[in-house]
Image (cartoon, rainbow, N blue to C red; front, side):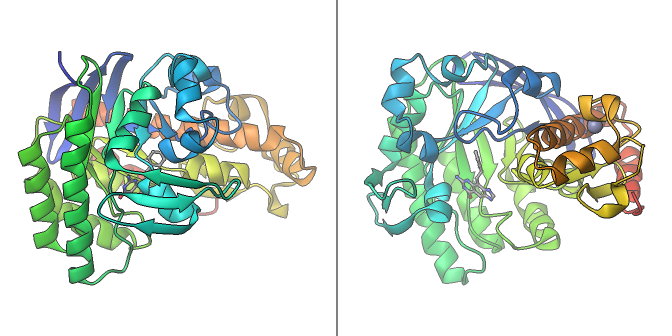
Length: 372
Ligand SMILES: Nc1nc2c(CCc3ccccc3)c3nc[nH]c3cc2c(=O)[nH]1
Ligand SMILES: [Zn+2]
């Protein structure tokens, strides 16, 4: 197999059950991919991440090029060996993180010049350099360098931003080293504009990629707008390649996007909010720091099999956070990732059984039950 393989195993409405195969193993879709920004899923060992059911994790070109540098990771055998994760890895191309993390950045046709948020040192990122960095990291799924069009943007702004990303997509493809089990994904842009999204899908399909991400969303547009953009973009996308919705999302976002034909997801919510004490449970969310949990002997979620729910009460987790104990963020991160994987497994099974709509609407109803 050149590039990565994709099998579409079953559909139920627009929802898809598939399998992505890479040099480091298989990813069952719909899949949630935990974010491991600086070669670590924060507060989790790789064994812990594996125990949640995750089959792929994400790394970041931006962070790793700054520290410890891509050359260092490459010298040490790539990201898999560096962090001891032997399953697939997807890395973002860095443009999104430059725009959200560094200051004093300038964007030109050539690429983006920016100052490190760590030490102010100057760096350049071009499509060619981003592809080279991801190659050094030994990423199984490489992302094209793109510009994530800010929200809101006028149609003219979204058009010129998208067209720059399409020129960068071609340069990314030309720089990518084809290897069996390794693939390159294009990223659809175009803001909230139907004709621009269509132009971007067509431009990327003409170039040809192993998979197609939908970018420019989860940038503050809100769930309704995100779903509207999916509704007019997804039907234009080829069916025999994976679709990856970048940066999404909360459980209700995931259910709605699987319903609309998305296969792969990433989001910092389960890890970032886990560290602040927010737990995602089947009936909504819990902020464990709230006083009402101080004496509650129940687990976070009775139906969850994670170490936090098997071994501890809400009262104990509340105490850990109040005491500033590092076990608190560890256990809530573990729970959130475990819950996200359970949710994706339930959606995969529902598609296989031809019961997606029944299962999805029941899950959505429970999320709004409240009083968790
Ligand atoms: N390259 C790119 N990344 C995005 C991310 C980061 C996803 C990511 C991938 C891998 C690791 C971390 C983060 C977005 N997050 C929210 N919305 C997003 C939009 C884009 C986008 O349009 N382009
Ligand atoms: Zn749990």
